[in-house]
Length: 178
Ligand SMILES: [Zn+2]
Ligand SMILES: [Zn+2]
Figure (cartoon, rainbow, N blue to C red):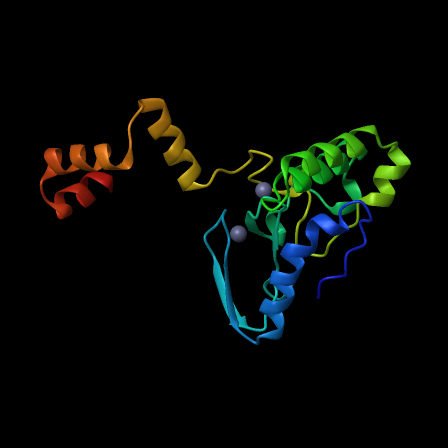
């Protein structure tokens, strides 16, 4: 179960996400998690990530505990600082000036202050340095796909037309991909 907000500076910033998650749990709804690395999907009622041996980074990448790059104890001060910064920047509800103020505050924190501020959060919102995707050890198909599209300067629609013109038939297209 999630702890209540302990990061003093960030408590206000996190209220929105915490409400969503708490509501989710109390509603006794089914939940499903798919690992962004190996594709394993787990689902169940009132389940949390830890029930399935999975975790999620601050950027919401989902991965198996066994795929974590490092343990929480092995995080450096810089990696903890980065985690706090990513957390502040990735909160969509924050206004620009609130983000800027929080970033400034975190940037100026001493090592001791970072250690006080950074709290392990169970299997949720783990530091990017622990995430195989944030660490660029693994890549999600969709991210690679968007990268290739951007490199080519093309959209899904344009590529779709090209596929249609080249194969004309879904089965031929699938055979090509084998
Ligand atoms: Zn996995
Ligand atoms: Zn990540």
